[in-house]
Length: 106
Image 1 (cartoon, rainbow, N blue to C red):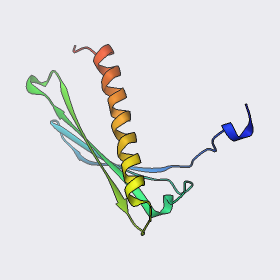
Image 2: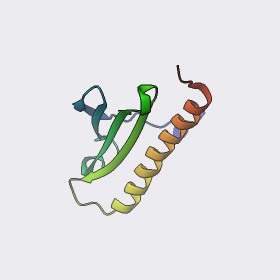
Image 3: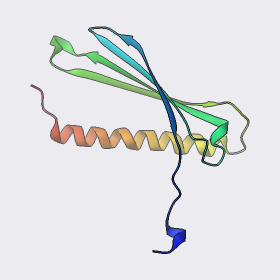
Image 4: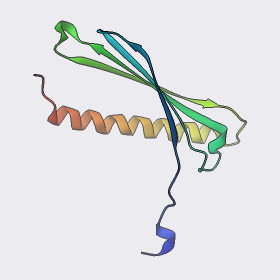
């Protein structure tokens, strides 16, 4: 394969913080930065995971929300935001599909 076919490694820094941790709810905030990508120092991605005990305690509900925090002006803000949103949605669609086919309640 020609050298142009290889993509360089991208450094991602991720900070995770548990905001709430009770018997009923766990809330985790994740902030990611990618200083090695073009315009990577202009934004950070925040994803929040909320896990709640379902009815009767036999299931767990997962709510995921995400946003892009802009710390510098960027001419490609709209394009980058759309690509990040699409990547987050794709990631969780893959998890949902995999989960639907393999996880069972116990």
